[in-house]
Length: 458
Ligand code: NAD
Image (tube, rainbow, N blue to C red; front, side):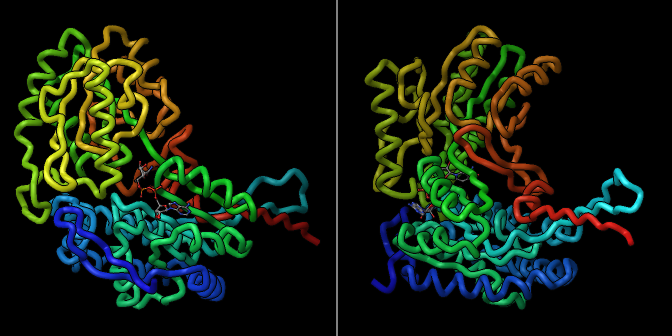
């Protein structure tokens, strides 16, 4: 099969076809990336910055086209897609500047005639693998720092949403970027296409965003040629609402973090722990908000919740709800699938330990609420998971804000903030949620090797 169809999850219709790359295409792409690396590395950071800025301008200029494409291939509400294009351009913008600040160090010497220098150099050709849930931002969050650092990149987007990545690569060329410096390989066979990258020691880095399950497989594969590795994996975010929280603000933010992208983000609140003394008030307010969500055609500007990305995604959400209900939970709003790949926004109460929804990433528009009484118990519950990506807490007590955010085993903590992600801050997880950070100066370090040069003076 030379090409494959990309399917619109809202309608079931084909959005377009893309090349179905195979292992030979992967080998060709590697040759291109390896050959282009010394030339790209030799450019000054200022030259690379100029190209990145032109790319950013074109991404912003094409905001509407990119947003529409993204919505049609994976079902994200159009207003969110427009926001994602700006977010994606934000990474290019930021790294266009940060690439100029890959400073070295001079270390004080222990002997009079030596000078000890530390310089930072690009790691080499990079293999990047991205998920479907942020088809633009997950691309630029990797590609922009890699290019700014002086690396060449071959990107393999998810098979559900490859069109956005292809368009971004076209805009890179339009900006004047060399074709072999940033290549996109679309494929319906990620295993066959990935193999040549893992076998080839000239590919010096793997950067992956996706599920923990696949991330573990690729981590092991990368060991064969000892590549540098960055992994942004699954999450299972707890959202803690203490008795002194401002309920209206906490509800507004839990709605934003839970139902964004139909609940399909790695930092979506997956478990909502509310202090018993305010639980009823919180559930009443949140029920109203969930009921008011506008579900429907994601191309409509007023739609807030679109379809799930595919049948497997929908089945998982339905299974989590069925399991919780069978074990005693109650759906106060929603609880059932809609037409096609839609699932009704759902609020579950009487949720208890032993239900799958409290142990696994749901990746859908379902909010389970659990009561708690003590700070120590809720911290223990929040940390009782293999995941460690994002956590949230709501309180007006400054001591508690520090105490709890320091005690949570997570890479990102939002204190009275449901949407902490931004291009200039570090994003990433601990434990089974990953290795390394993207965003900010930390994201650039992932693509730089440290070289120590010791000079003995004659
Ligand atoms: P996925 O792991 O199924 O797929 C991710 C990518 O890996 C896709 O490009 C896919 O084609 C590729 N892939 C799958 N199997 C492969 C294999 N055996 N060899 C090589 N490549 C393979 O994840 P998904 O369903 O696309 O995305 C959802 C997941 O991504 C969720 O778990 C979510 O939490 C996670 N995610 C994490 C972050 C983060 O920053 N931590 C951000 C977004 C999404």
